[in-house]
Length: 355
Length: 183
Image (cartoon, rainbow over all chains, first blue to last red; front, top):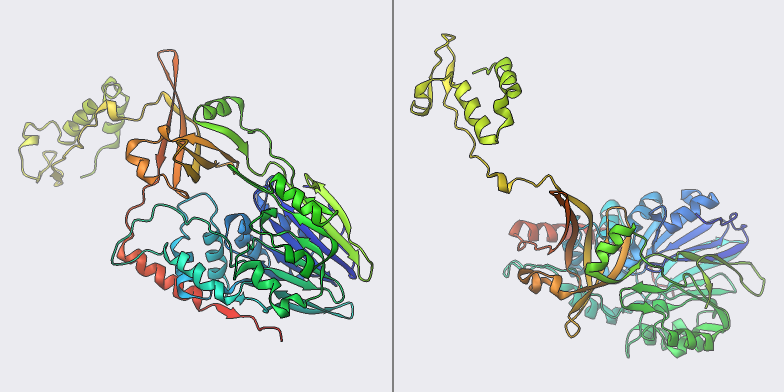
């Protein structure tokens, strides 16, 4: 485990982003030991949720975690979230309002079996919701968290999803719910679609702000367009720290986000997505982001060769080509600043590096 | 009827047991019937000739298993993965996969569709689960490697399962509460 030093001071804001190459998790300190966790990924060495390990390292007691947000249901964003939620039973568990629907919950139920060893986002969410007495749903303008710290009101709100995007997502979920009449044989897990139901979070620290873009993508009426064209959203304090949406991809990009929602030269943090042939951000994505800000960082730079023992690797190589280890480059980007100071102090851990 | 432990033990220690399973089964069943010639013909029950008042129930031995179908003790599993198909490229004839083993190690790679058995081809879709096993067999001093790639084939959903899905869905829905909207 990396050495993360000590806990932030009460008057110190912090955003720490973990990214192992497949996965993403964020820990936010809003002041006076109030913590917010967004999504979950697995720290490869310990196989534990990365943010849990981080808070343990800092000595943060469980009761200081006020909320856990699952920004959407995709595997790479909720790995280990059921374990994370179990460690913080008093924290509110928050997810997209798209799941406040009978077909959406049927979708989670239908794909929550334990037959597969592979983690499933649906299984993680199903497990958390089942374990809790209640969970909270958010959509555009929902208040995620509202605390007073350091004589300031800290307001955490959701900028997405918009309700008009729900019907499309629910129609997609409905395809994967078995029907009684047809006695469907469903052999495969649902395919991932352009993400229009993810929860984007805006944190107003009382004079300064941060924007966590999740995996929200753009669309003519939904996604980022629905945020930048909404008067209420565009009037939020501009953010000086930005977790870039959808691993820096072109589909998660909207030029107006940079002009409407962000300060000049914000600190931009990207978590890569390396799975099979899909590698985000691409070189073109990196160039585009670097044109928007000089302060861009990525949590993990590269993937390594397969790390199996020689004989096994050789035998596997007969069947499986282009073998690459997932989660080969675990890293974290930590942003800290004292309240009232002009800029974030950026620290890079593990495989994190400048973009 | 209480079978004498010592008789069974003696039999296990004799050369008879060193033979195949069929011979042992026949020998043991003969012993249970106390070498009664009418063993194979008497009705299901009769009185024991030992005079104990016990009732002998006719012993119907298990069907002998062909030695060829027994697990080959010379074959070892080298490694096993559960895989998920990420993407299928019909043009190139390959699938992008994510492999996960029991140690939690994960790898991505490409597997040509020719490795997929004909009966599993219809299951090759994005999200499909499969199992890849590498074997090593040592026979008469030589090593033979083999592998197996088989797709998980789930049975059709039963009515009970579908009912449970909707019951669970209702349970999940009952726990959802909306957060207030900002003004």
